[in-house]
Image: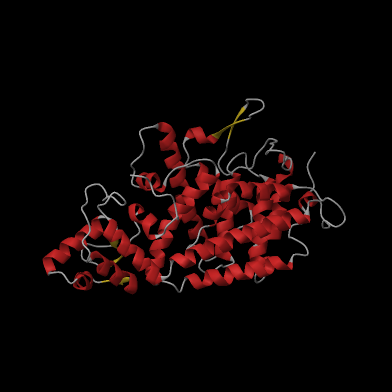
Length: 404
């Protein structure tokens, strides 16, 4: 028998004004991040954070593919061990779909990000890039294997822990109700962010796909934060916060799965208290990540960490990258010049070093070869880069630095 969509109520948390206050705080603090550094520098940071997003999204699924290995995969350098290679492909797939999603959001007539078409497109684009081994699901109780069809709603019943999602033949009705309830334009002000938090749980609860629901939900949530818009989003990662509190995240999802307990627990079929708890948890994770990046994006502190990185290069603490040598102290002035200006002519960067032309040019070449500076042409301006061998030192605890 199909399930009725009222089973998913309440769609939004009731009697929870404190959630609006928390959401507004996140929105305001996030917007301030864009004022911390030059926009070109922030754009380079956003490229790094796509890799970090992929790393933490994998980690939530129990797949630990270090950012170093993700970057290698982006350069077509895959591990010889098939299992590790598959995880690298999974990471690159996430980055590719995130970029595609951001492109869709920029279209002249953008899609309804809560609509079935958009959500199925995210699933389709992700799964078509995965190795075959990731497209087969095995029922842990029966041992029966089922193939995951990219972009298709599931056509069989499932159990997720103790939660039984809606019957597969009722999924179109649930997806239509989801699209209607959580379209960003239906909400206003800080309520948009509260609705995004509620939608995150409800999409996981519907479990529309045979597999990949967590992936699609996290990508959908990112689309929500872009669409609201939460200015400054892209300079911080929801996935990092959820992964670092993975046990709490899964507990919060379970709270919101609970049925209504009594007359004081809302007016819907599901627990309002549980949904409020999940939304509060989600918004607190967002606030924590905004505050974390806000502290790291202070220019003086970033310059100090760059200076420390230069000083420690070639030591047991920070070994040189393969094929490279120690960095001269003058490197700090060159990198600071670019950090302050966003991008700068090569001559200005060499001049900032205080070195003779030839020596400065050689040092500039080293910085470019290591990815610490980036240029679009052999003689073009340079901008700051955040190569994975250095970014973990520039932004402490952004991801685990590999032991050497």
